[in-house]
Each structure stands twice: as structure tokens, then as C-alpha cells.
View 1 (cartoon, rainbow, N blue to C red):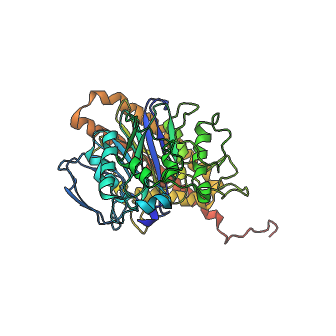
View 2: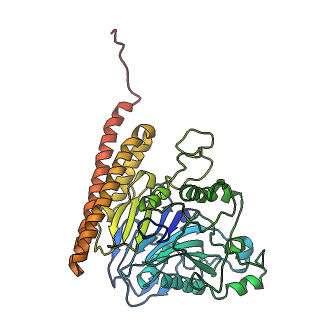
View 3: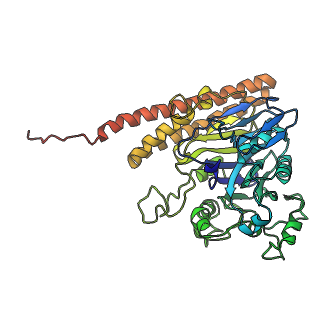
Length: 467
């Protein structure tokens, strides 16, 4: 689906880089400003054994057994599923994809494949069939090596032990790097992985023929190393305006002591970084909600550079998610519908059997019984008088964030005593309760904003006090 390309921003956080020992992978799905998403749970064994992509017409035979998994598909499957993100019953998380670009030299020797495996189908044909993050990397890599892909993409994987970032570099060739436990990475529409150590199979995975391919076609500008980004990627003026400032923003937030010399247009920014302080779930959320606030580049600011760079959070974000793994209780699929900066991340526990009806609804035109449209409704009302209404939105977001942590702590306390169906029922009830309460908070906010807006009408007249 063409409108998916050149979009998204991603973050990956290792367990020793986080404040609570959790592993986090997250991404903004950016495509259209009004294009609804749903939040669903696919049950164990639900998937068909033969898959046909509506996007590329690729046909695949799938394993007989499929795992339960969460997903955020499009409101219509007319152009494909685009399930985008989820956690399966084996506690494997996957997010697909971070769009990127390959250079013309590489594509001349390994062109993109028109009917290959693209973003639209990746979650659907990989996540239900893997039991570790490494298995996810290998399955996706094998499928792309066999069938090819029509896009250059990055894909995030995690389980309760490690996080991986996977990148395709051309029609069939790919690499993946494990995020060191004490590090994080932020990615923004460029190939990100740098030096590959082909002897270190604990931390790197790759297409078995990639070295031979690069050597045969003389693709490596520095044959003393194997820098995947420099061999397969791009570095042009559009990257400096569109992609690199978002990576710079992450480094300024999390590693300012190390990134002091970086500028928004710095080229060749490091992929792997150590944070100056331990990162929380709210740090990850704040990064995916970032629009350069506190800098001259904030698009809702008033400086001459306010629209110079593409922000992380913007109007065309359909949903933003963070998949939080290695938790003491159940892992969490955090989901913010619409623009992350003007929404709230709702925690759905892994192990739930269903989601509230409003999260499974939403189409075009807008309908206010849909979670996506409830969040978007409040968002566009706030946008109408941003500087007056933003404080009201921030109050709701703070209250909901506090309530989320309280609910999760309560759930973690009670979970050890529950097994089987009782555990699933409890997790579903806890997730549903918070999700519905959050929708109600946003409905209430919208009504308050409409009430306040009635006095902003241009058809107003102030009577002279002497009349």
C-alpha cells in the first residue's frame, strides 16, 4: 500500500537500559491522518493454512498450528491486512515495519520484488508461528530470501530475553542485530544497522549469501569493514530533513551527555546508544509523542524553524504502540490510537481473550462508537484552539497515566494466585476496564471542548456598555 511508505519512527530498549528490567520495542504507524485502526485478539488455531496477500498476491502455505496473538489491523482489508504489531501466546513481540530506502546500485543487482512479502503481511505470516524473537528473525529472513520483498523495511522483535532489529537491504538480502541489554536504538526511515560481525552469531543474523553478493557486485565502498547502512542505504538531503532529526531527538532525550556535538542534520548518527539514565515506559511514550517541543523546530511553536524538520508525532499517525516484555506479571501491548502526542497509551495485557467492542470498530466516515474516532475527535477539537485547549488534554493524559500504573500494579499483585482461564478472564477484565474508562475520559473531554468552543464563534458581537 503506497501510502505506508516513507513513514514511521521506532524505538528499542534493552532490559538493562530500562528502569524496571523490561524490554521495550515501539513504533508509530504513520500513513494517513484519517485511516482507522482496530485492536484485536486472534485465538489459538484461528489462522488459515493458506495465505494470499491482497496487496501483492503472494501465496504462502502456513503451518497447521497458529498461536494466539494481538494485532492492530486496518479498518478495511481491501488493500491488505497491515496488522502492524502484536504479542503472541509464547511472549514474542513483533512490530512491522519501519520504512527505509535502498540505494540504486544495490537495487540494480537485486531489485525489489513486485509480488513479494511486504509490510502488509509480515505480522500475519510470522508472529503466530514463532516461539522466540530469534525464531521470528529467522522465519522472516527465510521468507524474504525465498519470496523477496517489494519494500525496504526494518522490523522489530523481542521476547523476555532480548530485542532484535531486522532490516531488508534489497529484494532478498537482510541482516538483523541484537540490541545490547544496556543500550537502546531509535530509527527513522533510514537503514540503521552499521557494522556487521559475521563471526558473532549471538548478536547478528543475516542472509547466508550476503557477503558473496556484496563482493561479487563490488558494492562495498570500504572493503575493510562491512557497514550495512553504507553498503545498502542512502544518505542524501532528504534524509537530513526527514529522518536524521528524529534520531537526533532521541539521542538528545536519552543520551545528551554523549550526543552534545550532534545536530539535527548530523549524518551517520550511531544506531546503538547507551542512555545517560535508565528509561521508563513513559520515556518510550514521550519519545514516540515527541514533536521537538522545547526546541526551535516544534511545529506548534512560533519560531522561523518551526516546520523545518519532520516531527516524530504528527497528524498522519494512525496508532502508536509499545510492546513491553520481560515483565514480572503479564507482558503489555500499549496502544495509543491516532496522534500519540494527543492520545493516551492504553495497556492491554498479553493473555487477554478479547478487546472492548469500540476497539474493534471504526471505518470511514467517522463514527463516534469507535475507539479510534473517539481519540481523534478529542484530538481535532484540541487542534482547533491548541494553546487554549492543550492544558485540558494534558490533565486528562496525566490522570490516565497515573491510573494505568495503579491498575497494572494491582494486576501484578493478584496475578500469581490465578491460573488458566481465571488468569485470562482477570487480565481481560483489567484491560477492558482501563480501556473503557479512558474512552469515557476522552468523550468527557470532547464535550467540555465543544462547550468552550461555542464562545469562539466569529458571529459574535460585544454590546457597548453605554447602550
